[in-house]
Length: 153
Image (tube, rainbow, N blue to C red; front, side, top):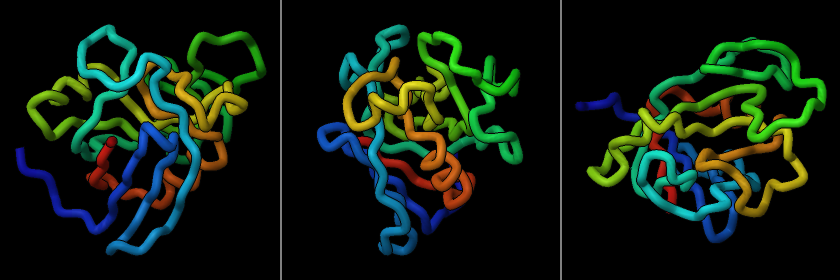
């Protein structure tokens, strides 16, 4: 499938646990992230973060309050601190894989999303997604148009 061109690019470094958003090669945002506790990988059910080339295929949650909890990509309520295995909060940037090895990314529901576990940002701790602090998730969501190119290394 052919996707519209974008002058935006997000690069995620698993080794540095960081993401950098740029537009026309100018850095707009550099933030800490949390990728998979299980490391990189492509298999369904592996709880690993895929690597390679992607696009932002869907943006979910625009206009929702910060700390909105999503279930099945639908806003449910405001997170109130209840225990969670992996709360998906604030916004979702849903990734589509562009390489043969990561083509299952969309069906694996791999996202950028806000988290209840902000204290773990900067270290591998997710179930495969890329977790961000909720204020950083708002910034990234607002600055990243649909079809932004993403590279995870």
